[in-house]
Image 1 (cartoon, rainbow, N blue to C red):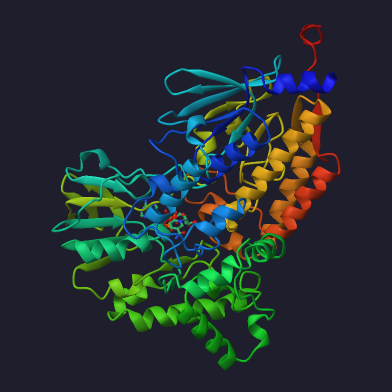
Image 2 (image 1 turned 180 degrees about the horizontal axis):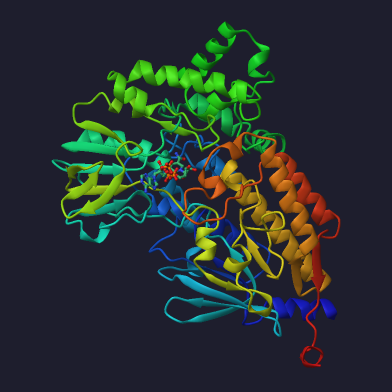
Length: 551
Ligand code: NAP
């Protein structure tokens, strides 16, 4: 009888779960909840599904995790039937895949598009969340899952005069749906992170002239992309369950690479150089796994950094441009390593110039272009590849209020705190998929998304079976987890870079290393143990009756 009452509550008119965001996370969350008998709806600001892969349509956008690994594993038939056409899939292909998933699992009927969520408020009496859309509609649900993405709040720097520019202004993360034609255009590109590094070669191949404004040179390794071969595809498809399991459970990032069991200093110079060269030639982020201590030991890291700097000097013909492109202020990969196709060689083109913004700071955008270091540059189009307010930006953009009306953005003023990157103390029944404090952006996002969605789903099943209304992170567990996140980062070279992982790209944002760097396999074990131990560190409770609250 009691069980039936609980089931009825989960199936009442009030939604069991409201999900914000229809990217990889939101779609799988919806699918999973449906199969478990929960009612759920997804709200999405964009015109269609896809999340970050919907918005980032800039030329050259592609994933730098191999497509056979950057894909869902939850459905064996999907895994076998979908065919990737390249080693590293382009944005259009990934978006086609996401759309295929939405159709294949009939997800669209529970996805509300063109609807931005602007607020979410917890009601202590009912124990429900009320979510408010930008046009004022409200939705009530018992649980709220923020599947809002880690890199989804794009960022324009506050440069004087931006609104006065007479030409087109584009941002890589808000790219127009129609293909943008750069033919005959004079283009200024600001930003040389992963997005800029991917876009610049393709823009340069089309435009009349490109001027790149670089503030910090980044490390980039060649992708060496290739068309998918039957043999490579088969080698994965025949072994998917075992390979996925290994990636999930025994790797640091949820992606299988050619891992080394040696430190860089354990081998002699010739062996080290040969290994870097071999990996440089085969391409991709596999380069980073040449030795097992590149992000742990500064001298080891320096050998890899020097190798890449040597490559830049070899590729770029003009010595002054080459010198300006040499990364100097952070260890290799302590800022997200970039993976490119012909990025450095693009500076050998006659129609490409590089401006070092540290020597010639951008002073203002003008109606005709921009002024930097007292020089006027004239452009038809300005491209901002200036990144994101990462990890917290999309969450803080929503007015999220938990117990006693406390705002999440206030709670996170000194940096995001969470328990396991899944929940925040004071915000019962609110889950964050790949939230700060979880491996998230340091891992294969799809692997981490699947783990969080599975964990949240199992948690909701547990609550349903045990008749519990609320789950909430305990402050002590959250504090201890924050210390663990911090300690894990301190064991690495990551905090040595002023990266977006640290919040350093946003003026005024608290500096704190946000993702958990202790390894995905390790993190998964911790999450599983916490659940097996009766959700250790979470408070599980019923809702006090209205009389008890008012007493
Ligand atoms: P990003 O890495 O944050 O790069 C932003 C760039 O803009 C940096 O070069 C930054 O310089 C520059 N910048 C920002 N404000 C500026 C200003 N006022 N003046 C001059 N330069 C300025 O952003 P992103 O390139 O969009 O990449 C973000 C993340 O998205 C990546 O790290 C990656 O995780 C993901 N991503 C992945 C792929 C892929 O899978 N291949 C592709 C694209 C993006 P500073 O370094 O000096 O701040």
